[in-house]
Length: 198
Image 1 (cartoon, helix red, strand yellow):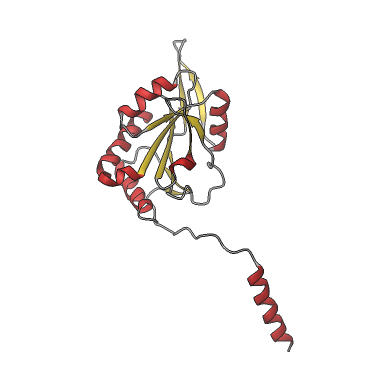
Image 2 (cartoon, rainbow, N blue to C red):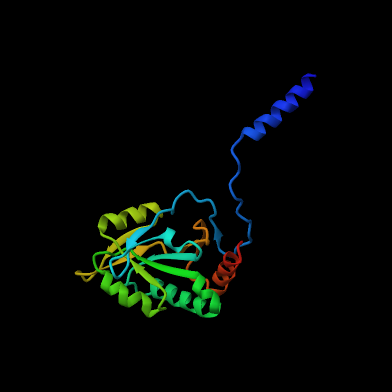
């Protein structure tokens, strides 16, 4: 009798528990799987027209977010060029991928400058910026490394920064960290997996 009571009590506790949320499929990604990461959730910055853009508005698309600056001599233009190649290879599926370039140099990267620089790599790419406080908040939210490095000749500076990209799936969930400098093939593999619902 006691055994039956314990079994009934166990079933009751199970039925009263929180219902599990929708499961996220396990995928063998080529890049770093950061599914379930407890930061890098919020992004609210202005585009070249001054319109506030958030991650939520791109739900239904895979979103790749890269942080950089327009005076960057190598990593930033290389990444944007690489993503332009990915867009071309995706063909019709490219309309389901949104690339966002977020400046970490609001002092020099005006919305007007970003509006010329970013779409030059691909017309669908969007450049985002904020004031110093907004930029600092995004840097903190994504736990980025960003450090201004003064020029040895004086007067100018460059910026050392996290060189990878963050990728969100069509449900708006953080899924991947893409390392810089590995070529387009691993990126294509992972984006196609996310576009297929993985």
